[in-house]
Image (cartoon, rainbow, N blue to C red; front, side, top):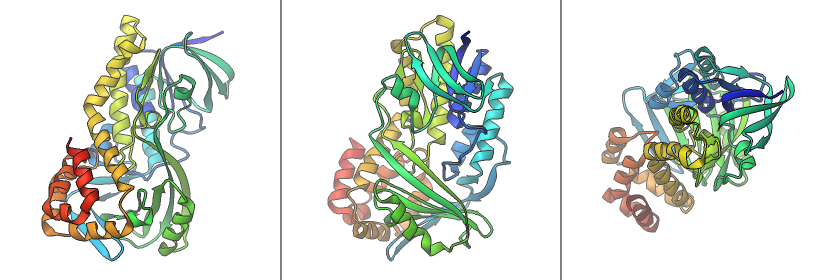
Length: 385
């Protein structure tokens, strides 16, 4: 016999749990399924959340390992360092944060089923086939929210488009003495994106990088400079570029499943959770009116694009132009950015989640214009049009 729910959410990461909680609070009958035996594992994230992203998660501070107030960027012999003098980001235990968000969804009334994987989809009958701890089951829904991460299995089964770019990420926790107040960015460690060192607390750090090609080789070279006492190794995939459409008949996609990660940093918690709450609002209307067609559900798409779409578009343009910058050019740009006026500009306008304003200001600054040559001129046209 089929089980019936008004809303089924696939994936219990921050986006999925936020969507399930939002729908449950609206009084809907919600099932949240997660393929792992425990929410929050395996960890596939750097665990650096802006203040805004952390606030969006609506969790306690139990998962917080450290806070940072600034950053250092190192490229060749050039270095740029700035400090806002106040907390700008939280270093978190993502497993613990994800679990707390899952508990919040359950407290709101969502049913959670672990060790359960969506195996097949009948989009016309609003039914998914799942397999897991309860064997094979058919589950009917009015609305299915796909929060199933980079693999986007639901989106593939529904015929939704794929992300234009996928980054591969590798990271280790290790014993290392680093500046506990600043994240350190190494753009030339991975010229397609960047490498990072995130302070986790006294004597500990997370060292990682993202890229497109030869990532493991670059990572091994990069991490060799930070000692050999490695505690944990994680890998992950980050889809970039957003999808042309994030809805289908009875289906909405959120978070990494919709390629909503920020192209400037790879972080997806802020954008994913905000999109999930927009989805929850439209799901409530859809269930109330019985409208599950893409034309009606496109209200969700309009809402998230109005909220975060422009920033993601600007970030993706910046990512594409990042690919044209050589290590030598990057060293020159970082050297120019060490100008005190530019450092002050970064502190004043820097926003990890909405970097568009800072990017425009930097690209229009006379010093940056001279430093970047053709790349900066092209970027100005792309980011200000």
